[in-house]
Image (cartoon, rainbow, N blue to C red):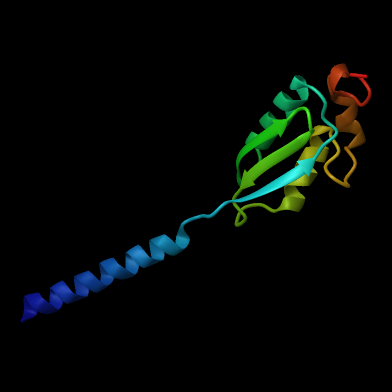
Length: 116
C-alpha cells in the first residue's frame, strides 16, 4: 500500500513537471522590416547586429527587396526593440529613420544612393 501511494505521487509529480516544461517551451515570432539597406555589406552588418540582440533567434536580409526578416522570442524582445536596434546600426527600419551618428559610421557603399 505504501509503495502504491509513493508510485502514484511520483507519477503525479512527473506529469506536473512535464506539463510545466511544455508550457515553458519558448515560441518564436517573425517580423519583416523594410530597411534602407542596399548591398551585401549591409546584409553582413545588419545580420551581425541582430545576432547580438537579446531574444533574436535568426535574421536574414533579402538584399534586392531590403527586407530584414527576424525570428525572435517575444518573451525577451519586441518588434519595437528590434526596429530600434536596426536604426542604431545606421539603417531605416520601416517608419523609423536611422540614427544619424550610426549612419555616418556606415561603409560608404551602404549609404543611401551609393548604388545608383
